[in-house]
Each structure stands twice: as structure tokens, then as C-alpha cells.
Image (cartoon, rainbow, N blue to C red):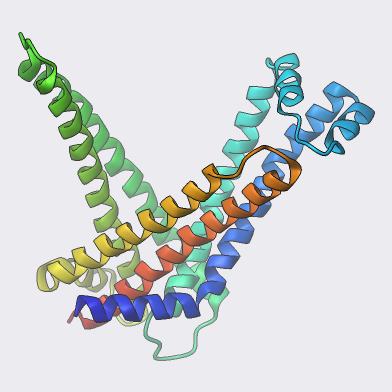
Length: 287
């Protein structure tokens, strides 16, 4: 069942790639808004004429940019932190708002539904699920830090070679990744369950369907999430490798890096659509 499900999910996600494009454009718009105050500040610090002259050069003068940042280093980090924080917060809210409508487009429809109406209908449940996810991640991180420190000291006590310390570091990294991945797995399926059966089921029925995935279809449920995780690593890793090959730094290469970065954002959202498509199919099979 899993290979057929993955193939169907890839096909449906590709057909619905417009949603990945929409989220990419939202991310691009917020990024521009976040950088605009910084660009205006750089222009004011270096005077408009010098700023324009530097921008019109054939090559991207990284040294000048670093000097400009050092000139106003007391103000720049604060402005960048504020604008970036606001962009991230607004971006999360917008993405959560749109997620309800996007998930609903993959759910079985007994009656026509409007995209924006679905966005409004599911935004609060999805926000609550997102906050719960953040809380669980913070708790897992805290438990890992508190438990791993004493265990690491106990295992590496009186060691004469570094192999035990190296082994514990790798075990700690693997344990942390497994914990965080598992939390995301469970909570991402919960977000789908909150939307897919909403018109037909009560809150209790939606939670029962969510839990039923792990009871009746554990292999397919976990396998789908693992497959989309591996797909994400493959796609994102390939694009990051391409970005690392872009040298030297010129305006053309900078534009190419911007294009690749947006392709990176698009690919991330497309892989997310693959999971949504497959997860919605699985939820349809749960009694």
C-alpha cells in the first residue's frame, strides 16, 4: 500500500503545486518587507549617492557591506532582529491561516467548500495544535538536557580514551533528532485530522480518527512520514549543494542565489503537500 500511496501523493501534490507557489510568494513578500528597513538604514548611513554607486558596480562589494554594518553595528542588529522577528511571526500566522484551506482541498468533499471559508474555519484549531507542538518540543528539549548531562558524565567518568565521549555525543544527537521527529510526526497528523473529517465528525471523532491511524495503519502512517522526510532531505540537500557551488559573488550570482533560495522554499512547501495528500488519503481509510 505504501508505494502506491507515495506515488499517488506525488501526483496530487504536483497537481496542486499552486499552493506551494502561493506560500513561496508569501515568504518572498515578507522577506522583502523585513529587509526594506535594513536597506533604507544602510542608504542613510552611507548617503544615498554612495549607496547607489556601490549598488551599480559590476561586482557585489562584500567588504563595503561589512564596513557599513560595522559603522552602525549598535543599531543594525536591533533593527534586523525586530524586522526578522516580525516577519517570522507574521509568516507563521499567514501560513497557518492558509494551511486550513490547503488541507481541505485534499480532503474528500461531500459538498462544495470555499477556500477562504475553510481558512477561517480551521485557523484557531491549527494555531492551538501549533502551540501544543511548540510546548511538546520545548518539554522534550528540556528533558533531554536535564537527563543527558548526568548520563554523559556517568558514562565518560574516568575514561582514558575519547571513544565513549564521541559515542555519547552521537547517541545524544540521534536521540534528540528521534524525539523531535516523532513529535512532529504525531502532531502533523493531528493537524490533518482536525481538518479532514471536520464536516462529518465531532472533536472526539476527529481525535479518534487521528489515533486510529497509529492503531490500524502504523506501518503505512510512519512509513509515509519517513518517506516524505527522506524526500525533503534529498531535495533540500541538492539545492543547498547547488547554492554552495555559486562563486564568485557578483550581482548575477547573487540573483542566482536568490532564485535558488526561493526554489528551496518552494521545494519545502511541495514536500509538505506530498505529506498532506498522503495523510488525507490515510485518514479517509480510518473508520
